[in-house]
Length: 176
Ligand code: S3P
Image: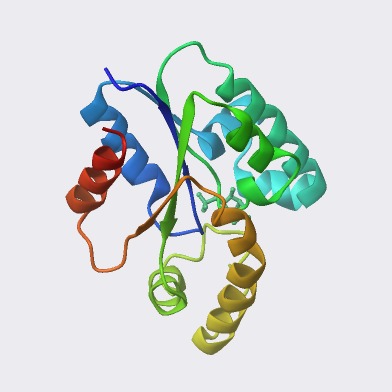
């Protein structure tokens, strides 16, 4: 049994949920997807919460749900939303908890742009950006602001050009 619970952080589209689920399966521990947990507790999609109630409301609920998940009395993997570590006291919650190890799944602006351009419809923060060049510059600025938080993770894993199995292996190696 591993010693730590795991928190995955990183920008939209890096595969936090997919990788988190697989990792938890391999480690035989619980998996929680924060966005999914928020949707279940609010009985609304993230897009609808943002659209109907606005971002401040969403960030408060995100913080509340994250606090609840962190208190689970089991070992777990939590996949956060792209903005989670950058709002409220979420990064402090991660850093001060000695039973957690955090991983920043890092991808380049070019890779993120290519990936997100074709799957932006369900992502409320970028869905209205129509041109790839504009998306590239949005992500570039956004990452510049967010890297301050992402870089506080215990480990940084570069994910570009890697298979899921390689990323999972890298994470597992850091835990031993
Ligand atoms: C957000 C990312 C989303 C979701 C919300 C806000 C962000 O999660 O939490 O739309 O601020 O980057 P994913 O990273 O899972 O897409």
